[in-house]
Figure 1 (cartoon, rainbow, N blue to C red):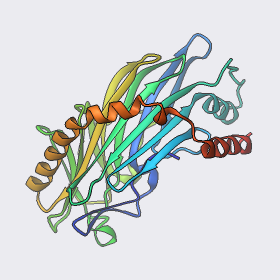
Figure 2: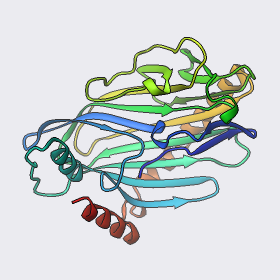
Figure 3: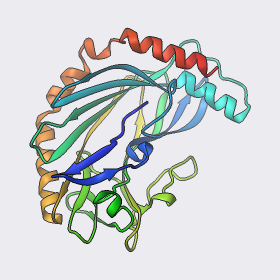
Length: 286
């Protein structure tokens, strides 16, 4: 459960095709810190199994889709205890970090804009908070998945991949990236020992993955972090950059709409169907 892009095309040409779901979406890293738990490093991929991510509610439309889910700290601590064969940290109540995702994909628009709002509704601080955008592009699908080249436009903060046909795929966040990286997909790694991207580009063609990182330092209880990602394609670098710049300009205009939705009662009400699914999955994991 989480958020990833299964397939993505630009004017009928594949940009993402048959990529692993955990390599086509957002990752997070931070250190949970509190008197009762000490310091616990956390790395979350775009897709994590229930009960680590609990679905709260979802709405899908032709132009806008909204997903609300929780990172379940309580269940994460249980999982870590089992994996490390260590004593379980007992909490007085369940603890969560809420994640809102607002996806704008209207027809006949050459980009997708996705807003990510992360609210710390737990009693713990999220220290050294980083958000990563990770995309394993397959430019031209299976016909060209292993001959991609890559680049990073510093001025516009756009990372991209392309091949010898001139088809480009790339993305950029509203918040300025602090680190970037392209590398062979098999070599990509973010874990407790490597939290930062390398600020390097892969030299040459290959089966490449692209990633951007935003460091936010600390997310205190009841505080929020928000950004948006624009992803697009183009038949030249110039077309790609123009599409993404238009997407980011449009995303700025939607901030008020997104924030109004995030604060709404409907958006923060647990749907009964998901209560049963989350509970069943949690019981299965005991």
